[in-house]
Structures are given as C-alpha cells and as structure tokens.
Length: 65
View (cartoon, rainbow, N blue to C red):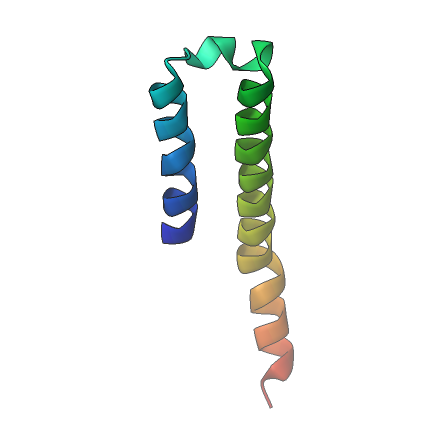
C-alpha cells in the first residue's frame, strides 16, 4: 500500500507542476502518459488485492499439514 502511495504522489505532483487540470489530462501527450501510468498502477493494485484476498489464503490452507 505504501508503494502505491509513493508511485501515485509523483503523478499528481507532475499534474500540478505542469499546471494541468485533471479534466484536461486526455487532451495532451504528457497527460495521456500520466493517465496511462496511473491506470496501470490502479490495475496492479486491483490484481494485488485480488491475490491477497483470494489466492493467498487458498494457497496457505493447502500448505497446512
């Protein structure tokens, strides 16, 4: 969770630094790159959450003697 925060914060900082409104991100090349980065990060978080809540406990139960 901390890693996601560390990766998300620079994205919002970059948006602010460039003076771009969040609603205008899809209108420029750099905005599209930022949206892509944040979308991939969100997808990675969802997959990690699915693994932690679903697959992880099942594997742990099967490893029990």
